[in-house]
Length: 290
Image (tube, rainbow, N blue to C red; front, top):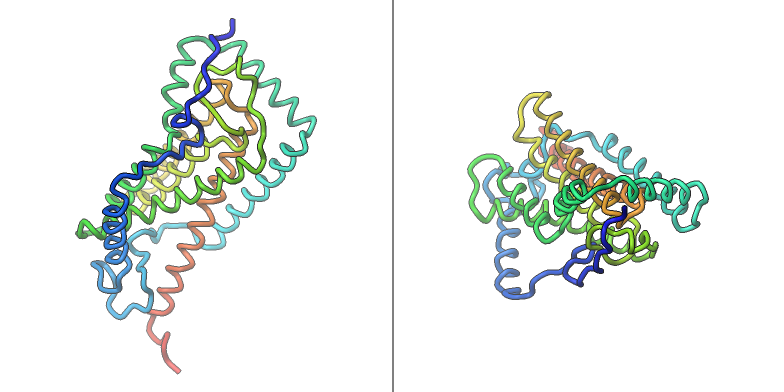
């Protein structure tokens, strides 16, 4: 028996959730400007004396981060897979459509009230209004050593900016494809807007990967780091599952969200690692000889 038909989400609830308060914008802008200025200043705590690089990525990039080639390779691979999937979605590929329909029909037929309630709780993990600020807090707390409040705020803003920019670009892709969602009669949760890629899944994956990236510098031991990344993956997978289980997304929408967010974070890590390596090269002995 199908669950009771759900209402269409209000603008504040729609996915992707991009509502933001405007109060105190001037004060916030002043605070952010000061924090970022201190965080990137060559005289900020933790910057190497005489460094030729304005932003010392020692603060935000772990030396355990993947190399530029590895990160870029992962990003390109995921981007290519996303491109193929997007073309199939836009072109209404028969195999893809049939798979989406089959999985969706099976979910609607087997789900019950308890698992629907669990899915509605899990799906909150993809809401931008709390996840983006949360990843900023993680970035601030993960900053190594004794730092000023402003320096930590700058590091948190940098990490949140990576995730926020990814959410924004994902939203552009979402509106560009304009894919229709599953029939509203099958919905067991609130949703709104186009379907591909899933906004909640994209947000959850971006936040999980960014948080794990920042925390990996503070975690010691291979086993603990593996558990950290496994936790990030489980978080992203759970939110993706919830969107399919609630009937508000096709399975390929969720796969698209995973691919897009992974590609975005991988390229961000590649850029940050390249910038840091560039700074290390410029600071190495003999770099300015001749």
